[in-house]
Length: 156
Image (cartoon, rainbow, N blue to C red):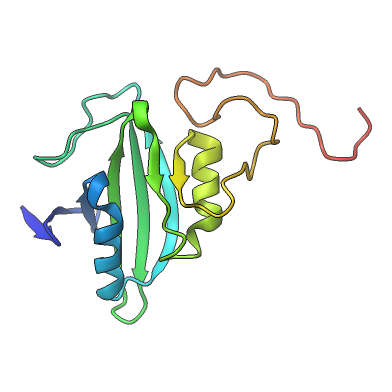
């Protein structure tokens, strides 16, 4: 298996995927920026609640959550996807905001939908759901049901 910056590197569906240990996340992201991956085009997560033994390279412990960051190098015309395992008992990650300001709203969405907090984020508040909403709708243990849509300022 290949590696990049000491992390396992696979090719999945034609795209390079780098599996990074949570403790090395910011360090490796800075190295990738130095390599030309200067644009964070997506930050999202996956909840593997129903698949606790999902696949991960040797040396990477599968966890309930997986943070997925897509980076773009305009200069080199390349993309790379970074995957980081996030344990349910400590669902937090360092924020990419200082390195990639475009991650600001994307991290808020991950926080809102999955409940993964980002240490150092300048405004970690809900972005899609109302501030008083309880729970995180994209978690697999979130109950499925009808959600009434209410628009701000509309008559009840």
